[in-house]
Length: 394
Ligand code: HEM
Image 1 (spheres, helix red, strand yellow):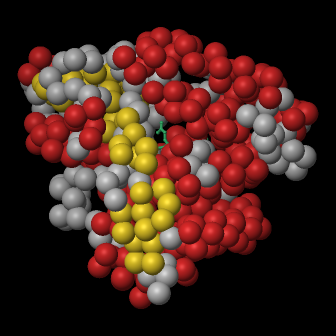
Image 2 (cartoon, rainbow, N blue to C red):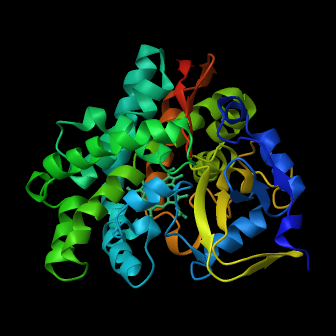
């Protein structure tokens, strides 16, 4: 058994803009260096390979989410009622409350309306011909759909993505992006406390249901606003980035786009391939709770980990030709939604939204031409700021 001092180390800054612009060579170097690699700049161990990433995510008892951010300030700031960092039994009570509304079965009656709204939006943009796939499509759809499902008031929605983006930055290491974003958390708290009150949430909405669960004693009353906040923070930017990348990847890979047009039963698989190739969530933290022996190294209790979702989804040990965007591969076991206890509670909704947009594009569009994308930089999210496209309907 080697001492922890023998663990491979790296001084790469995976949060620097030049690395984030094209992170896959750096991820590959980390994977090749070992199953856990000390990131010297941040004092955490990266978990860059698929097998160990899934192992860590699967075992909440050995790997705590309490310090899910890679910096202490935000971990201290977050509430104990944040579902992301909670353990059972509180976690399960909160999760069941969300699942009552977010399970595929519960969403079935929403599906026709979501696909109609996708068709309307894509139809309008296709008539226009040229548009920005991020600002005109990807940023609009989830805010409207998820905003309505949560029951958020119209007023203030325009500021949401900016506030939620700052929230995600705060999960990063103690870097400039985190430091610039932490003060903005007061603005998000103010929005939640003053605008998203129980009375302001639409009747029959997911948000109202959270307060009703608290009334029924299913969750502690002080957990309710935090759980509504979980919907708001987890359910928008993630899907925005998935949709932006979906359009970009389809434009860049015309043969894949043709395959999708020829066989729309591939739509679910195609959306999963987008998530595998360009995972919207790139990293979250965990802390070792019982000594973890991985290959010939033991990481002691208290060791901080950064699980690299985007790297695991490109691990050549798990995926053949991992950098190839291939909508026909078996990608059911991608980790873009996480895995295990904290695996994404909203994945059914995200899939419905993504599939609705892809189906609407297949309905209307024969060819997509993309201009130069502008990358968006966030500590833990991967997405685009802008993507000019022209679509053809002939
Ligand atoms: C493509 C879109 C999405 C992606 C890639 C995504 C990704 C993720 C990931 C990776 C996690 C796991 C966090 C961890 O392991 O610590 C997660 C958790 C979560 N997501 Fe999503 N998400 C998406 C959309 C949504 C939507 C639409 C909602 C709800 C409206 C949502 C709600 C949640 C919640 C509540 C959790 C916390 C679950 C728990 O701790 O038990 N997500 N998501």
